[in-house]
Amino acid sequence: MSQPGEPRWLRRGGAPLAFAATICCQGELDQALAPARAELDGLVAGEARRLGDNACRLDIDCTPAAAWSLLERLRARLREADVYLQPRDELGKKLLICDMDMTIVAAETLDEVAAKLGLGGEIAAITARAMHGELDFDAALRERVSMLAGRREQVFHDIVGELELNPGAEALVAGAKAAGVHTILVSGGFEQVAGPIAQRLGFDELHCNRLEIEAGKLTGRVPAPIVNADRKCSLLQQRSRALGIDLKQCCAIGDGANDLPMVSAAGLGIAYRGKPVLRDAAACHIDHTGLDSALHFMGLDRA
Image (cartoon, rainbow, N blue to C red; front, side, top):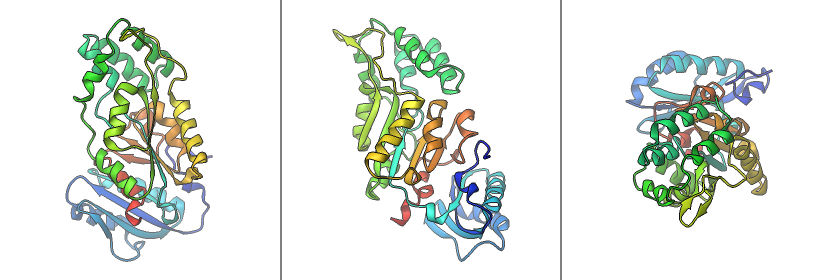
């Protein structure tokens, strides 16, 4: 039985496979290559293929168990780099599904709204506990929105222009679309914010929550269905099936507990600066570099 954080490819048996070791650096690539080659000594086939100024790929041949052990050692040595190993035949994804808050954008958008209304501390505390998996997502969402009852809907529109994208977000979506990948933004946030973000970046689809509005004001209620952890995962499954794309060919990126089922179900699940509950469960992490590193982990540079 696999353990949390172990990649699916670890179950592919004991025979040697052709693996791709992808290294994305925060600093100079050459500084990472020397210690990486020391760990990879005798396994590398050919020269490192540069994927840009701060990324490269090395081809190695080893068993899945050896690759997993090697990945753990590389991460320990390359403390300012994001590294992932995977069989070369798993490179090249066809669907990308991304969370929004703290993944595509550098904020919890409901917290930003609350801060404008003077409720920041109280609502942010509930958000943090929900994202760490300490509270039921649906109940936490309803509680936070109920605290906004009677407030004008306009406050959600007002924060859109103030939101910052996380580094590499635009390059990630643009690169995926250029490679013919179908892109989906899925969010536990609300359409007043998620809509403009999805349009700005050019996502092919958006799935998010809705606010109940009466006369331009929030009622404090959230209509069903709520886009929670299970809903995100089912959307990945439904849309991939409808598009004729195997889950193995999908990449899911998120940061919190409500992204865990989606990230676990995708062929490549990435924890982007993940909360511990997600990071511990995901085999692939982006902790140091931008979201565009996901393009290299997806193998889209081959497209």
